[in-house]
Image (cartoon, rainbow, N blue to C red; front, side):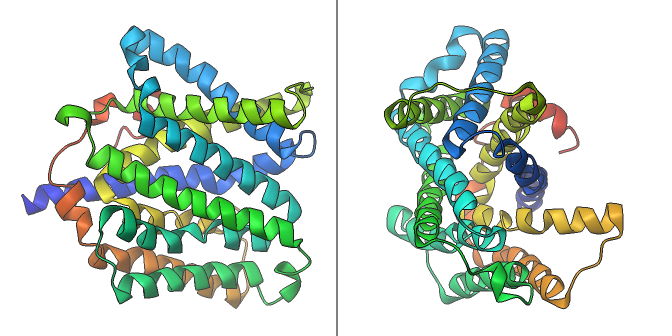
Length: 330
């Protein structure tokens, strides 16, 4: 039984690593689109494209039964949390320096253990808190990189927006993990493809309503950024989110959130491997701290194996077909 648990956890970590790689390169595409569209327009189109494409796949592979989770109250709440979280992060990124945006957006990792403690009764110990601070220190060193200008010159409004987004994502992470792992309706398996679509659908609805309230949904989409918009709709929104949903049911909210820190160092690792790019000691130290916090959390988050990995919640075959293709070795 122990061998099966470890194997299952390793699979979930590998799946989550794939998601982090995708999310790690997403800011590059996001910055290009933000040159032509507002943050709200960018986020609305991104999720709109994701919902359109995934709804077609859902109908082809699942039929009408695939839309069964659309009326689930928890999924609706998750959709709105996700909408405000993504919107706030996109707005905050545009109002702050890249270094500070990265630091504040990642602050939700430190909030998750406290939120899980209040909502789930998850054990909160000093080691988890210290590992969270270690991970944040790693991000701070990378963002700082020896120059205070990387963390200053931002508006107070942008800082508050990013902090609020981090709080929303903290709740999103804990509620998602609890719903997928504990609150399965009638003990039935949750269809991953349907759940991913339902959460994206409600996120898209929330964003569309916000677009109408703020300034109307009229959007002019230049053809030159269409490939980037499609990329944002498919890879970081459909595929990465599907992978993340699959992994959090097995790892739990705390381990999953700590593992999310890896997306911060993905661009540096890719540049080092592909371009032989070298960095300062600040960045190398930050990368090491993030890796250590990610590795050591496995030993302290005891609920991972006891609560989330003792039984299958849903099988890999229930994943989005596109997701299954990207994780065929798992």
